[in-house]
Length: 153
Image (cartoon, rainbow, N blue to C red):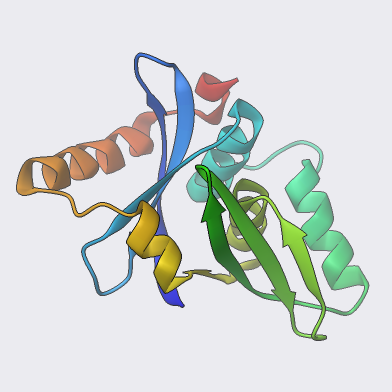
């Protein structure tokens, strides 16, 4: 397993499909995972620290985990088959729950949990950005500073 950081969410054109970008910590590989618009908004809200008037689903789940006396330790993206990614939530109690990566990432951001990607998933799905692509990722980070989560609704 390799730790990754959540670079952010973007909309892939021309399909107009949101995706989340994960960058290998201490490495050069980037994993793009196509996700739904609701999950893109949830991740963007968490990345930007946008407060909500009432708890969103992932905030509710984080509060429930805490209220039950547990803690989300890490989210592991464990497999990719036919372009579909699979994840697991690992809790301090030892419980492991299967999840969609987008939900796991949204929850991890709220719980300050680590996100890990299996080495074979990185081998199968990651790309190494060329210098031009790295500049695009940096421009994307700047874009994230100005985007509102509602833009993905």
